[in-house]
Length: 148
Image 1 (cartoon, rainbow, N blue to C red):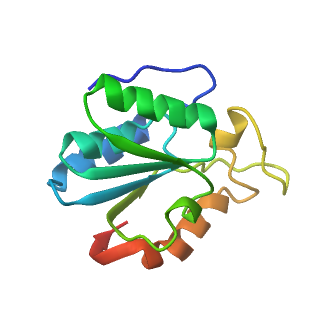
Image 2 (image 1 turned 30 degrees about the vertical axis):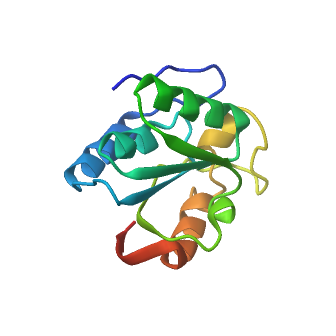
């Protein structure tokens, strides 16, 4: 698998590679649907697509979505890349797997950064701004027996 780093897009850290390994172990295949929230480079969506799943990548960053599309093309797979905040672009849809490696570093202020790489890593005063939202909303977007 090849990933081309683009300037201004957070590149997969080592924990993303652990998530990718877990996705591979899930034996995804044709007919499986995977949602990658906060896709960044598209790494996890591309892993799912390489396994034969239908992959949807969501991010608020235009650059991230360009990166996800480019990395999908470099790997010869199709990934649907949608711009928006977490589940908003996929309202009403359900997925077999929802995967994310969201920002998790505590941020000293209440307001989260709106631009740049800081937006990709800062997660509020407790480091849970995105994780809590994902966990609260995921059940409404998981297929029966789906995995988060």
